[in-house]
Structure formats: C-alpha cells, structure tokens
Image (tube, rainbow, N blue to C red):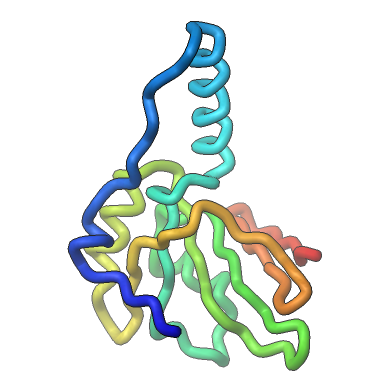
Length: 138
C-alpha cells in the first residue's frame, strides 16, 4: 500500500478540538499544548528534508536553514542506512518560511505530517541541536 499526500492536504492546518467539560480541563489542555509546542512536538513545527546528500551529515542543514532548532535523522538498525530527515522549528511561521525558502539546489523541505519521532525495533533516531550537540536515540 502507498499513501500519497496532495498539496491540498499539506496546505491544511491540523484540526484542534476545542470542546471541554470544565474550565479545569480546558486549562490543563492549554498547558499540555504549550508544553508540546515548547518541545517542538507539534505537526506544524516540523518539516521533512528531501534531496539531502547521503555523504553529508544532517547537522550541516543548520548552515542552510538558519531558523531550524533540531534535526532528527532516522537510522535503520539492521544496516545503519539513513532514512528520513526531520527539521523542527520554534513555531509555525518559521517552519512555513523555511519550507518556502528552501526550494533551491535539489534540497527541498515539505511540511511533516507527524508530530514527533521515536525509536523502535526497526530504526533509531539521532538528534542534532542547533547548539551543536547531538543525542543518539534508543
């Protein structure tokens, strides 16, 4: 099976539910959303990189996309090959600016439809931060 996302789908913002049973529940949900936004685990703050050369470290993307905060690369556990590369941004506007600007030189950015990355039995995540550090996941 193959799943394709059209430009119409990519241009839409994710729907957010706004109905709560009580003011306390509403406040907890607002705090949860703020926490997810601060940790960049929001769909609208992430972009997929396409066309990045396999022989270059994904950390070098920071030289081309200045407002990116985090780069996550998927690495296959079986053979160590790199898969998807995901960039995270501080907010929606910065992500949208980067997606529009990075359409040059064979490297392109597209809005990501996931809200977070996590390691599993097939792949692990290596995270590079704008501050220069990196962390190997799982």
